[in-house]
Amino acid sequence: MHDLLEQFSAVLGKQYVLTEDQDKAPYLTDWRKRYSGKALAVLLPKTTNEVAKLVKICAANHVVIVPQGGHTGFCGGATPDNSGKQVILNLKRMNQIREIDTANQTISLEAGCILQAIQEKAAAQDFLFPLSLGAEGSCMIGGNLATNAGGTNVLRYGNTRDLCLGLEVVTAQGEIWNGMKGLRKDNTGYDLRDLFIGSEGTLGIITAAVMKLYPLPISQWTTLVATENIASTIALLTLFQKRATSLLTGFEMMTQESLALNEKHFPQLANPLKGNPPFTILIELSDHESEEHVRKLLGTILEEAFTTNLISDAVIANNLSQANTFWHMREHITLAQAEEGANLKHDITIPLSSLENFILETDALIRQKFPGVRIINFGHLGDGNLHYNIAAPIGIDPKEFNHLHEKPIQELVYAQVERCQGSISAEHGVGQLKLADLRAHKGEVAHQLMKSLKRALDPQNTLNPHKVVSI
Ligand SMILES: Cc1cc2nc3c(=O)[nH]c(=O)nc-3n(C[C@H](O)[C@H](O)[C@H](O)COP(=O)(O)OP(=O)(O)OC[C@H]3O[C@@H](n4cnc5c(N)ncnc54)[C@H](O)[C@@H]3O)c2cc1C
Image (cartoon, rainbow, N blue to C red; front, side, top):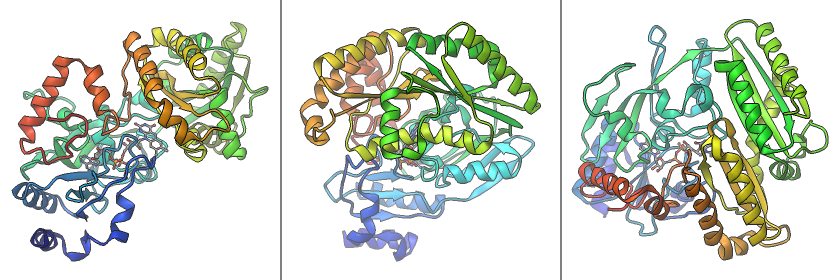
């Protein structure tokens, strides 16, 4: 073991091989505090060549590598097991922007770049990097690619996969694959880029990427509206999609119970809509033309929504700071849940045509079988993506409640997802949390194909084993 640590130190320098308990501690527990592990060492490489050398050493010694970015993932994918024999390869020191190509509208950057820093760098050159999520101050682009993160702009710009044109990857054998072409068309056989995106560190280590940039919108209008039920909410989405088409960049749903939790923990984020409506919808329109154009369009659509009784109240943000407060309301629900204690998360997608049926039926079943629970249902409704989370009844210890009821609640929710032909993981991935569920819900043929890919690319099973798929 000592010899192994010396080999790592020879590549990185001793200070970037963390072995002391207090130095390793920040890397060992996931954001939700659901998973905690041990590690032989935390390795902090600065270059792709260093990553390749480390992987070769690990491959030669059959040492398991757990790749890690900002460690904000919700499925325990970046947390090691308890053996103390695995190493964490954290990419935070690989944080260089290699190039912004203004003609090609792309940014080439290393995997350890923090998402918010990328957005700011792009904006400084009048570009939009549209990937946006609540963890953007700490998650890293390598982690976003490895989980194919979604977030609030998927409706208009797609998820991380849609934003990526090229990758650089260190394979399980320590080879460097240079796929850093910023091409929008490249039909040269199998798409290796797409294979690594969303593979959660189980097929290769993403060290750099070429991502798309977009012109920065000139004007953005954000509004909160009240709807009485899910049917009106979906009809409202259809109305906005028809009238605003590609100007619609956000459509987020928050239920009364979600916002009640927000208000409890973040009273400064009280809902400005009257009377605590059953559903509060955050809608954003963005435009590359004049402010006036989009403001007028928003007004016309809202008027139509009022006259057809789809909405009962609306507040339009009259400056950027108010718009940011509306977004904070949405983003703080996750944080409010964390403050409240452990909860049961279900990150699911349902076809929009089945969404009403799913919510009405599932809510009724949950309330009947588990009286008193709080259904914290919110999400990127424009994508059919619900965070259908369940919190223990008030006054009951969440840990105890979850211990007793996690399995039956999850089975109920996933059976409903299956019935509606949805997905049990919309954007958070699989990690270790949904390993068994993936097997049950993906279908046998798909599961076997995934195993074949894993065996082919990582035959020694040293890259993040027992995450996503076990071989
Ligand atoms: C408050 C909050 C809000 C969130 N909101 C959203 C949201 O709206 N949408 C959404 O999709 N997610 C959301 N998330 C989840 C999380 O932020 C995303 O999954 C994010 O993409 C993870 O990035 P990370 O750098 O933290 O990755 P990590 O958590 O470090 O890793 C995630 C997985 O990717 C692997 N990995 C990391 N880096 C690499 C690499 N360079 N090469 C290969 N594999 C790698 C890890 O092994 C692990 O399996 C949220 C999280 C929080 C805490």
